[in-house]
Image (cartoon, rainbow, N blue to C red; front, side, top):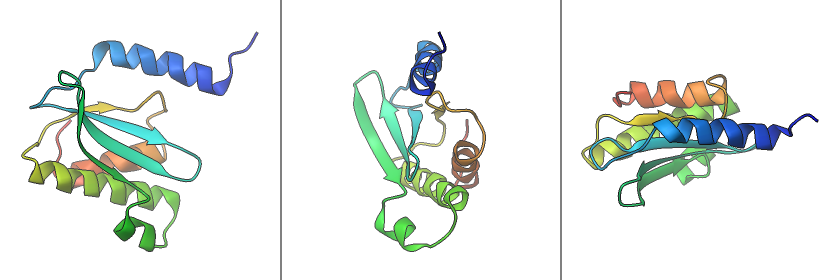
Length: 118
């Protein structure tokens, strides 16, 4: 029997999470992508806290009327800017079981352009 798309993504996600973990100095940049929006957060897994987050629902990003790939790039730049304010320059990228392609790749490139290293 074929796995559903969601259960397949969760299996991949769990496999990724076995190796990737965030610390206070090098948090995990977790990506969640829905059909309409995209979310990114910096997570410290040691303390179990979210350091900062950005999404396509933020006021300044939501106001820009561009396609979803460009919105993802803006979210990446926003999370990088917030990370710089928090004193973070390196992160562990967690694609959340999604392919590194399309909007996930655009978000990563935006974060790199914003100055994050991963």
